[in-house]
Length: 270
Image (cartoon, rainbow, N blue to C red; front, side):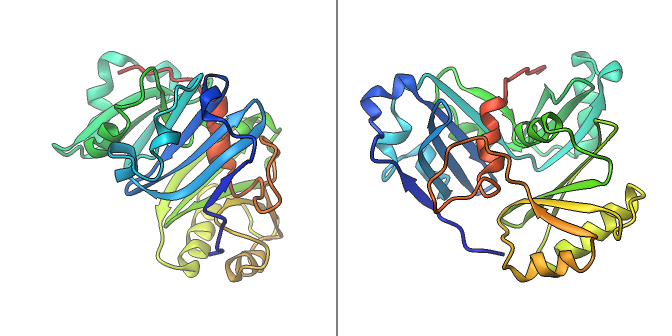
């Protein structure tokens, strides 16, 4: 995997004017990323921050306690299931949750994912507790924005989307502009990612020598992983949808999932 810029702060950032800004947080199992934006301008960015900074902020105290116009928190899920809209009922969320093997320290959430699907997912209480300090926060499924960005940019049938964060690979596939596949896998090395990419292509009946793999997150064109994937698929390209105005040291594909949270609204069923 590639090394990425972990922090950025624009000279024009003024937290006394945070009521004009938006705060985006993407909270993973043991770390989080953040972005402060004004309209489409990125004012501050951080990745791989310790979860303790959310509950007991030290280095980020001033930034995390400012009075923002809007706060959106995306939560990655330890397990999830997609439910077609006609089959979903808030009264039956507990029934869907049985598929997730929910533990005593986990909580089940359900939200609208897109026009045709709900997502039922579980997160550990520690992550939820870490977000309680944010009043009137917009709490969403972590991949909701990423899926929405792809949907808005006319995905073609031969495109398979891969997003890499930490040791998690997320695969998204649209057919005839409808979400047909979304799943995540944990990996240990680059070979695992290539294996899961081949597995997903097989599952959705896509011929790798015909498919285009569109990648984002922790990957760059000079990475060994990128080269290995390019040898398997007909083409591999970076997903450079320009959601934010970025400094030279950051690329759109690197911050895509975090930036995409700006498009999300919490439509929570439970």
